Length: 550
Image (cartoon, rainbow, N blue to C red; front, side, top):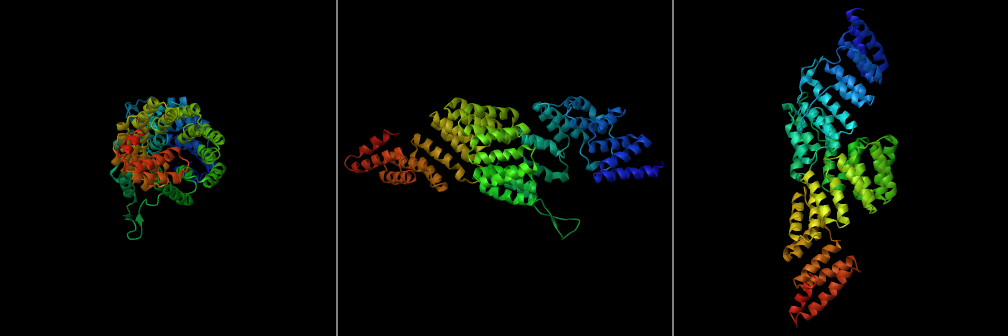
C-alpha cells in the first residue's frame, strides 16, 4: 500500500469520526495500523475503538503496545477505557503514582518528562497532565475518597485553567469553602488573552459579596467588543450567554429576589429548555414562590426526558414538598440521592421534608450525611443548628451555626440564626451584634425577606432598654412589610414602656386588626387604656405597670 493511499485512509478515519461513523472508522484505522505499525496509527485505532464503545478491545490494544507506559496519551486513553469499565483501582494503577500537596500542587513531576506524541495545534490543546490529574480525581471520587479527589481536581485546574470540568466538579460537589474557592481562582495562571475566562470563573463560584461587586463582574463579561474580523458588522459579547445568565439567576436567588430569578430563568428555559443548571435554579425559585403548577410541569418533562438523572426526581420531590405532601416528597428526594449520591440539593431536600414534619432525628441524619459529603457547603450545618434550636438545645445550635460561619463567612442567614440563639439565651448584647452583622452582610438592598431580622434586632434593643433605636428598626421593618403582627405588637409595647400610651394604643389596635384574638395584644391594650385614663391623676402608674412586663 502506497504512502498516499495510507494518508488518504487516515483522512477517511478522521472524517468517519467527525461524522460519528465509528464502525467505519474502526475498520479503516485497523487497516492503517496493520500496514504501518506506527504508534500514532495505533493510537488512532484505539481512539476509534473507544469512541465506538469497544472499551475492552481498545484497552487491550493500548496495553499490548510497548509504548503505553512511555507516552502519556496512550496511558491516558487506556485509563479512560478503565474508567468506562468502572475498574477504578486499575484506572489509578494505569495512571501511575502521583503526589500532590494540600494546596493541589503536583509534587512528583516525573510525568512531565514522559513522552507525548503531539498531533498538531499545541496551542489549542488542554495540558495532558491536567487531564490525567482530573481523571485521578474522578477515580478517587468514585472510590469515595473525596479528600483525595478534591486535591487532584485542584491540581487539574492549576495545571491548566482551561480544564473547566475540574472546576465544575469542585463547585457542583461543594468541595471547597467560599474562601478556598476565592484562593484557588487567585492562584490560576491564565494567559493574557484569557482575562474573560478568569472573570467568568469568578461568576461561577459562590457569590456572597456586595451587590455592586457582583454586578461589576457580570458587566465585565457583558462589555461589547468590536469584531476585528468584520469591522462595523457585529459586536462580540457574552451578554446573552445562557451560562452567564444562569449564574446571574443563581445570584438573584441567593439574594432572596425570587421573582426576579424566576422571570430570568423562565426566559432562559424558553431559549434553551434543556439547560440543566438553569433548570435547577428555576425549580428552587418556583419552590420559594409556591408555583406548584410550574413544578408539576417541569417535573413531568424532566422525568420523560431524563429518567436516569437525579435532577428529574428531585423536581418531583420539590412538587410534593410545595403542596405539603411530605411523605411523597421524601420518597422522591431519596430516589434522587440513590441515583446520584453527590447531588447536594436532594440531600438538603430530604432533610427538609423530615424537618417539615418535625421528625428531627431523620432530618439530622440526612443533614449529617450532606455535611460529610459536601464539606464546602455550609447549609447542612446551618440546618442541623436550626433543628437543635427547635428543640431548645441552644448551645449545640450555636456550635453548628459557628461551623456554618467558618465554612461561609458572608452568608447573612448564618449571622441571623446566631442572633436568634443569643436572644434565646438572653445574651441581648451579642444578639444585637449578630443582627447588625446580618444586615451588614446582606448583598443587595433590604427586601421583605429580611423583615424578621429587623424585628429581631428591635426586640433585642428593647430588651436592652434602647427604646428609640428599637422603634427606628420596627419602623424600618414596617416599611418592608405591613402585615406582621410581631412588628406592630413590639412597636406598641415599646411605646408602652416609654409611657407613650396614645401611640401604644394605636399600634395595639393595628396588631389586633391583623389577628383579633391575640392574647398579649388584647391584655396590653386594656392596660394601656387604663394607664392613659389614670396617668393624669397619678403620673407614676403607667411607668410602674409597664415595668412589670419588661
